[in-house]
Image (cartoon, rainbow, N blue to C red; front, side):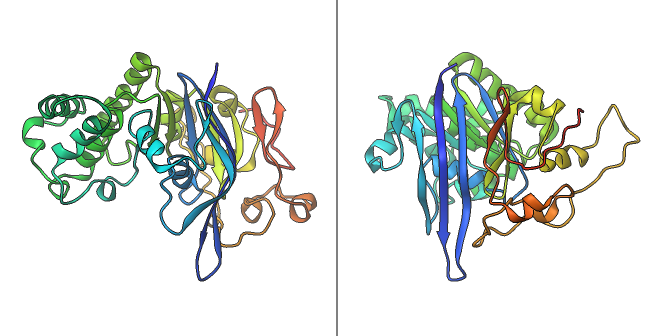
Amino acid sequence: MTAILQVKDLHAHFSTKEGTVKAVNGVSLTLEEDSVLGLVGESGSGKTMTALSIMQLLPFPGKIIQGDIVYDGRNLIGMDVRSLRKLRGNEISLIFQDAGSALNPVVAIGQQVEEVMLEHTPVTKRQARNRAVELLAQMGIPDAVKMLDRYPFQLSGGMAQRVLMAIGIALRPRVLIADEPTSNLDVTLQAEMLQRLRQLRQESHTAILLITHDLGIIAQMAQYVAVMYGGSIVEHADTITLYKRPQHPYTWALFQALPRVDSPDQSLHPLPETPPTMLDPPDECPFLHRCNKATNECRTGPRPPLVEVEPGHFLACYNPIAQVR
């Protein structure tokens, strides 16, 4: 397959009075055409900041310090604002995690859904409105016509999340970054939204970067998985390989904390302590203080690089787990 989006050694920092927050610390990813790449990790690992960096939408005072973001042969780093506006929502779209903050509270829902179509396509206001009704109905929103005249504060969290998804897929982008797209939905609506993403990929060959905490969703949706921790990728492989043979202690710990249907009596083992603060982090493995397999090399060496340990399986660890699930 051909890579449509490549993130190479990306560093995004936030300068604060207390120091520099290294939210994204050397991330490298490849999203292939007509595929789904799952990005997993705990809250605070840098997943959302990676997504915002790709879209060049880092909030102030965030700044990309180093790296390249190559979409369809074009480097988005340094691209002028006008060219970026042509890409956003049209060729690359982002479904934001926090629907309450992403939707404009003083603009009607209909106008927000119609805006992306009016901005990028030669449609009339009436055509855009009809398409907005169609999109909202596809998202399972009842009485979509009346919904157009409502405001975000009149919507539940799940309803607002579905509106965001309608905006994200309106123009069938070539790349869709979905940041926790089902986080506020019940299991029935969650299944419907995931099916809609599958249809988008099948019908439009859209490549999807799916950001989630839910390893079950990743197993259903993604062909490839990247595990993120402490602002960097610690393990990357195809889904089957990673689920059968996780080698990073953090990846292994995520599976140990997951209930299993095939082993209902198996004890769960939550991760001890909390993720590291990214305020001026030391140049060492970010998982060091929570890892029960750390060696002297881990404690004295620099942050382990992401290297290929077997074909298509990349790992950033000095002492990987050699067990088979």
